[in-house]
Length: 189
Image 1 (cartoon, rainbow, N blue to C red):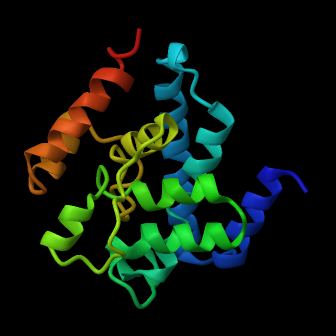
Image 2 (cartoon, rainbow, N blue to C red; image 1 turned 90 degrees about the vertical axis):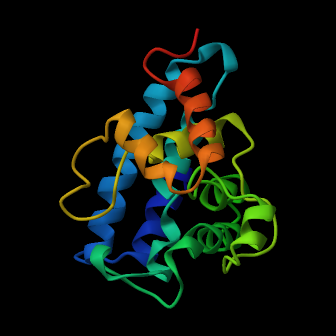
Image 3 (cartoon, one colour; image 1 turned 60 degrees about the horizontal axis):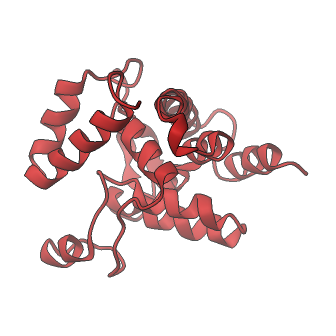
C-alpha cells in the first residue's frame, strides 16, 4: 500500500463519509496543503520535502474529532487545544512518526513547555514548537485558514492572521512574521 493510500485510509477510519467533520477536515487540509506547497516552493534553496509537506498538511488536523468543537462537527471529550497532541498519538500508533510531530507542533505557532505550564494548558509537559522546515511551513500555511463554517472558504489576509495571533502575545506575532518574511509571497530567495 502506498503512503497516499495509507493517509486516505486513516482519514476514512476516523471521518466516515457524510460526517460534517470529514468535510471540514478535507476542505481545510486541502487549502493548507496548497498554501504550504506554494510557500515551500519559494524556498527551494532550503530543500523542503514537498511530498512530505503535502502529506503532513493533509494529516495535521487528524485529531480534531477528539475535541469538543460542535461548530465544526466534532463531539469529542477534549478541549480543542488537545487535538494536536492527540493527532500525534494517533499517527504514531500508525507508524507515521514524522507526520505525527507536525500534528503536535502546528497548534497556534507552536507552544513551549513554559507556556503550557504558565497557562495550565491540558497538554503533556513538553515543547510543542515547530522545529523542522516542513513543520514550520505547514504551521505557517495553517494560520491562513479557518475551519469554522462560513469562514473556511477563503484565505485570510496577513493582517487578519496577525490580529488573530495578537491575543497570544507579541512573541507569537514575531514568530509568524519571521515565517512571513521567509515563506511569504515576497519572502524566500
